[in-house]
Length: 83
Image 1: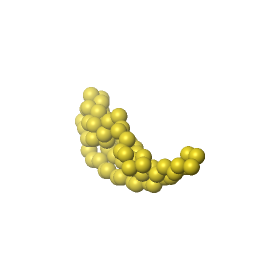
Image 2: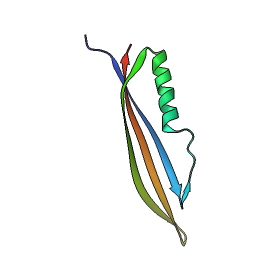
Image 3: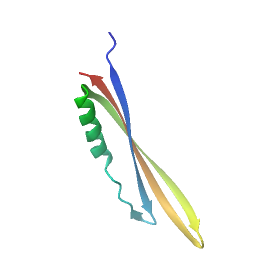
C-alpha cells in the first residue's frame, strides 16, 4: 500500500521600500507551525520540508521620484505523511 501524503506550499513576501522593511502579517515559521498543527489534527505528521529564499529588485517611478523595492520571497515546501 502506498502511504498517503499531503504537500503544502507556504510563501511569504518581504518588501523593503526605499530602505524601510515593511512588516508582514506573520513570518514563514509561524505559518509553518499553523500548517503542521492543522495537518496533525487531520492525522498527518511532518515528514520533510525544504526552504528557499529568492531576492528580486524592482523599481518604480512615481512622478519625478523613483522608488526602489527589494522583494524577498520565502517559500517552504512541506510533505506530510499519514500517521
